[in-house]
Image (cartoon, rainbow, N blue to C red; front, side, top):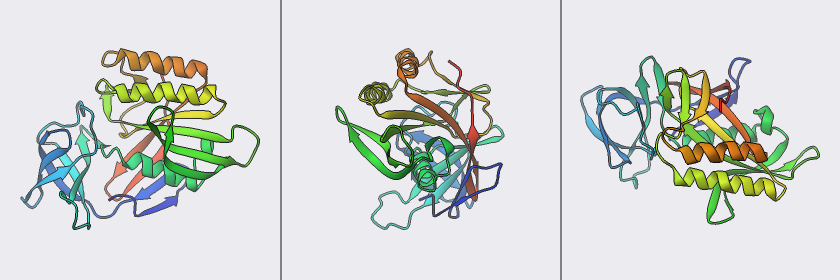
Length: 250
């Protein structure tokens, strides 16, 4: 599992997440959504779990260099987790659980200016019609909404210099947008964070050609007061850097 150590960083990197040692290899195939066959650099063939349930458009080409982590838990059926893939010159972080852990740690350290006012952080908080938001921030220092619901999306598809979400039709993502709007309507603060998990993109946009309804709901959500914050992270073998913000293009 990633995220054994976190630290505040210098002015160029907002937040740093240190990794345990990772194993290098190459992708043989990705299949059944959660599985990937990998050949490690020493020639060992392993099957790794992937938490990314999207299409992984452009990020699952056989032969691509990859990094895996290995869990120490003997009860895990698959000890290996697929963490990143190299696409062109950029490493792409494809573990969808990582942004949640990274952002929670950043919020607890009050390292992200947009959310630094809150002093309490909870994860996987129920809301509305069988929905769970990734984070709930509470107990603000200053006057304002007492709660902020946060939903996080990991963005891996690059359409040229544009990071686009989603890479497949997502009824679950559509539901999250509707529930974020409900949170605003009831007087709370709501934020959608796009984690661009690659360093070769200059801006973020909805993938209207893949899921037009998601794009429509995203624009509607912004109109009613849902905040959208695109962040980008840089994956290095020894660390993951939460570096800054990208512009959102609608």
